[in-house]
Length: 484
Image 1 (tube, one colour):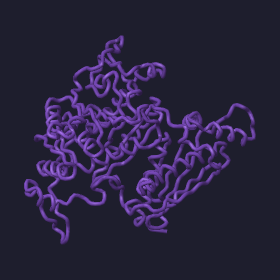
Image 2 (spheres, one colour; image 1 turned 90 degrees about the horizontal axis):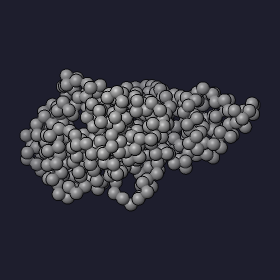
Image 3 (cartoon, one colour; image 1 turned 90 degrees about the vertical axis):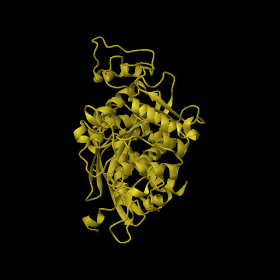
């Protein structure tokens, strides 16, 4: 048994397809190739260490972003002082995660499967980083929206500076009211909760409807055109409630205007507004996504998504250097029934091996992926990192949702296994189990699941979920990396 200190393996790493995952930027080489970057680079104080820059110097971080975009992506780019300066490796993580979502078979593609992938970047900023990366890396087309004159002007300049990408990117002023119809509340005021007061009202709203008295800046409703279809939206939301809070980190200087950094209620309120808009535009996007800066907010937002009746939620963690962010994705499209294994052997214990893992993936990364998988299925999870164990709780309602989504034969077997053969199935209040992760050797991890109440009549739900977990982990950590 390894000691607790030993078992705390490397923290999550950047996306394996990120071009910087195996080879971080070489500041010394970049300074040699681009003399304008040279004044910001200084040698390491440690013998044999890598050159670095002063991360508190906005000019240094801006010049680094400029040369990385030019050197590695063929993109010409610039932003004026005080605008938010993005880091290229971190933003690339988000792009590659969306690529994973789009390539998965969790939900069906649009009818015209040969069409170009189209994304919507909420608050693209002067930097326009996501459209530029998505277009240059993957050939995706984008609409990037914003509300300030400076952001719109410089985003357009950055697009126009790249003629090879300009036809793929449209910059849209979110202050322009594009939709023709309006929803006018009788009182003249809007309560965001009213949007979801009754399920029938939410389902009856069409993409063209907008909230004319909505006092907050338009996010998607009123910005997306009536007949538009997108594969996804993405957003790097304002993380802070006040400009004072935004300036608390003395270790970095990424710039940023108040509109980019601050929103009443912080990121939780902003992403909640995206969730509200997604109910109206549920048929206009395959995936809705946003970055989240605080894990505590992620759990609250997942709960909100369950309240509005999404069909699927996915989460991930983005890590670059000392900075951690989380990705949140959801969809209203019905999950493919084939993604639920119906012929899984019914057992109270299951296990499987993950072999051939790359060296950056160990027990910690697999444990986080297990937690994300069950959170995406609506479960409550509690991680014990010292024991490398996740405790999972599924409520009665969540079990019912799983049964409705395609576990009918498991329901039948559950009924037949009960001593009471009444046709009224009484579900247990909760389904409780835990999943443990053991690092057997470098590149090999054992995942084991155990149901806490072995006489539970819904063993099949547990067995099916664990089978889906195995499929998801092997797809994310083994199959894709082998190119299969």
